[in-house]
Length: 216
Image 1: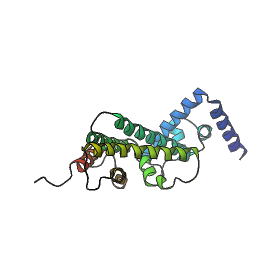
Image 2: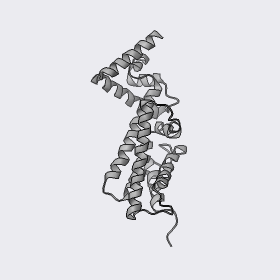
Image 3: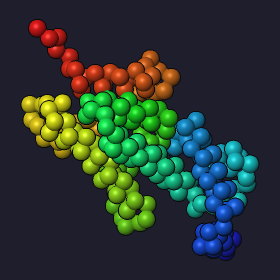
Image 4: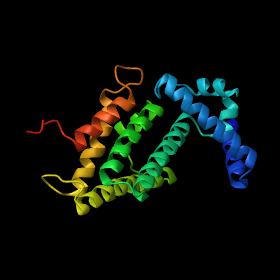
């Protein structure tokens, strides 16, 4: 118990001093953890697996993080930040709303493939358990709001200029439908299967913007 406490104190001190070498090594450990989570899945991955892949012993890993859950939260946060940056960047472009929506859907599916399966674990489970008031939960709630707002803004712009139309022209409802369609892919999409993320993204985009009914 004393040894665990000592490591925790050393970890807290290293973070407080903001040592550049420490930050670089911690970032490398998080990147390694992401690769292990991709290969083995979150549940099957053990801290020892991550330590071995990083060329560290288990005790050294604790110098950088408190455990596997913290590593998971860090790799998820990086993926979510990337997704928020992607949709906010699309919102700021001069492209049409349909083009932005298409790029968003295809970009989000590509992200789910790139960060498979741990980002799906977050979408499926952790987004419904965002209780508590930690730095991580506060950041994730803020990122979620920014993500939803950017998608709504893209859709609202299209409704306003007439490039998008729907039986119910409500940007919030439409954004929920678009995001929900992509998120539900956690139930069936797997990299290496019959369809790539690019295939799924193109299909979703066509469903959204063209529909299935053949024009008369």
